[in-house]
Image (cartoon, rainbow, N blue to C red; front, side):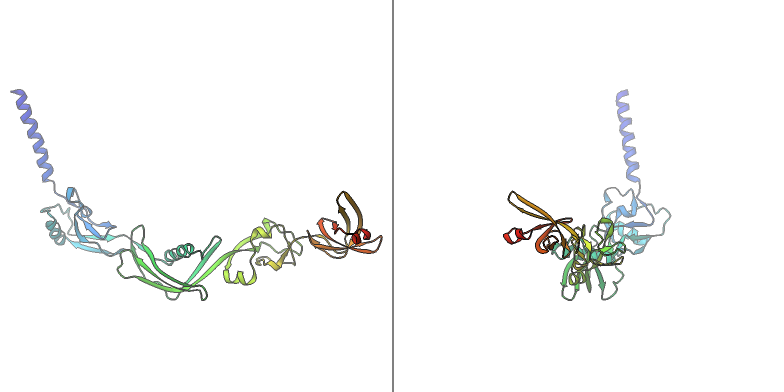
Length: 317
């Protein structure tokens, strides 16, 4: 009997707790901020339970807010199946929707991705975009993809483009047009240097220049410049062109040089005077000062000329 009484008492306690839980009313939260295009019961109320995901209002446009009166809320939630709720002292609440500003940088990134996929914008390149008209003030929904490029027409000859974007949370498309200037990294002198300077990494800095300009003047990579010599004194900040550099001279005109003739096991050496300057592997005319004969050879290292093989050349030694 005692056990039966305990059992009945336990059941009564559980039923009482369940009844209390059932009687707990959802409580209005007050001002709320939402991400989605709809406002749910769970957005508006604490303790919404299984009704939390039920839609009751359309959310305001991204980046804006609206006012809901207590009467509007009551009518909407009654239609959803909630007869009573705790207003928590509010007679109205503000519902705001999160948004993302649609800026030119966002659209430029999408255009750049498209040009990269076409192989137009490659490594070491960038671009500048000038719009024909300012962008309207637009706020996209707060999603992973606030804007998407749907159409891009690009005319490289004139650099003009037109593009259409779909903006999340906005029904109408966004159309823009303007000019795209492709840019490429080009080597510039980091400081003013005299003619003949052998260029190293500290002498060069890469700067972006219009691709059309670089192509019209000639473009060299920083790797091609290393170890080359300036053809003339050049000011700081000047973009280096192929005509500005050359392989460094290893023999200068009027230098005293060693002349080497080598044919098979036979090696003969003498001295002479270079009649012209030359870089590595370039031709050099050498005057044999003992015979006053001119030999033809190539510069093979600093101060050394290797002459062509042949009877006449050998006689010139």
